[in-house]
Length: 346
Image (cartoon, rainbow, N blue to C red; front, side, top):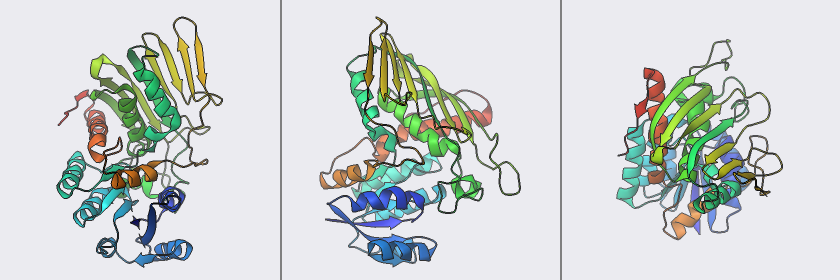
């Protein structure tokens, strides 16, 4: 039985991490920390355990085996590294960190300490994406030539323990990145997962078009991101992330291959639609993807616990996620400099 500590008791912890730990028979949540101490106390009243007044105090508890890091982006690296060095396995929420140097250091410390480091890229674990990967590997649409992948919704205003225009997602100091770090990381990592290729080049534009603070000024982080990615094998395509889709969420990915087209989460009735060059159509009704208003079990916590118990590497390991984070930071550089950026791979 693994003892789990929760660092940060906001909405992501309350909606996903804590309930999924409670549903796993191989672990028990025993400690909570939040900068608002009363919030940690509320979790103790609901689930039991101990409320801590600092994350350092929680990490000092030798009986805690692993932690979820569910704090604002700018603290991911600091707390993750401290947790690893204190002998804990770590599941860190995305984005992994706010600089590539911090991402690399997190991986280095995990390797030095022999502890697991996983990043919460839950889209790799959805049944439709896993099935799509299997079909692609079986050559159903041939060689992938181009793609379009999109993640857009109306914004993170309700995805915060303090909802509204004051959400920390809009705070440049706390979030550092906007929609690129919130949604873009998912689709960047997904396209690497589905194609099995590395992103080697990016041409990007990150902009703030509509989101405003309580005083009516545009927020200091991007609310839209548009990227042209070049992958290995000369695959090219677009990745779009947006907080300004004021209607149904768009979480679709379309892959264009030499034998046909695969459309994923593009139809409300079918999770995957395959339209082959010979006219054949194949539909898969698997499940609808999670949305901000419709949550289902992510599988991330179960994979984290399994990786510790079985001592195995997973697709969510920090080392595997590094390639996607390099593309994220290269895209930010591309947007800032107004030019295409080649992505260093090591």
